[in-house]
Image (tube, rainbow, N blue to C red; front, top):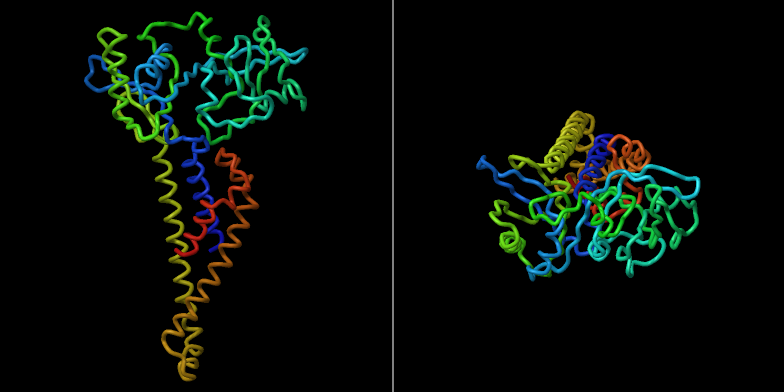
Length: 356
């Protein structure tokens, strides 16, 4: 029973982690990614998650429901140098200065006031800071980018958690991408991600219509419909191309069903073993009846015994989960911290499993 319960708890951990993506951001319920349905000769829309370079600020200016916007442009690998330390780094983004007012990443060194505004400045993660500067505070120091331009570090943030779709090491200001040849003022070139933060109480479907209408003004013969995708749901529901695929939520349903199936098997095994032992306890029950025990008292006794056995089993299952957490993380490709095991959600899941 303990092994069965441990299996169910591990699957509960996996499902809980999948459902937690990007919910650590403040006001995550107001954050959305702008997506497109493009129409060609085929009547079925072709769905993409990228937008024009110039669209974000225009939408913010023209659509009153949009409180803030932030554009993200993925940059190819860059050679970063600091003294004799040189590495080609991926995970580089060029973003608007509104990045930290929309996304709640934790600061380690420096402050967020004025970051990502000045040219030749950068924000790096703790991992990159340790790689190039050890344990020193690197704020105010420089890293040479592509053997050409020194960039001053204006802040260091803790590494993005693994339950975030935004995985990066370096943030450059938006003017860095504007200086590249790939940048375009055309409304027909879709190459970047655009995120918006809606005002409290705004309806996303109304905003969908408004940003499409605004685009019609700037793009002649526009055949694209724009829509907002909930930021916290991107990991589970995002899709691309022709046809709306269910996304990663399908695996959440599958693992939840497997966890329930394991629990049902554990219940059946428990009942079968209890039934098999009933003949052994028939004399005990008879003696209790002779001594005046009522049916209700016998039911309470057996339910109490079952509850006690299950309680002991689930405590052992919890210990198994704790001891095997590192192996689980390796197998599942997760980074579940031991503190998650005492979170309100997980303890609530344990209580639910105990009652079932």
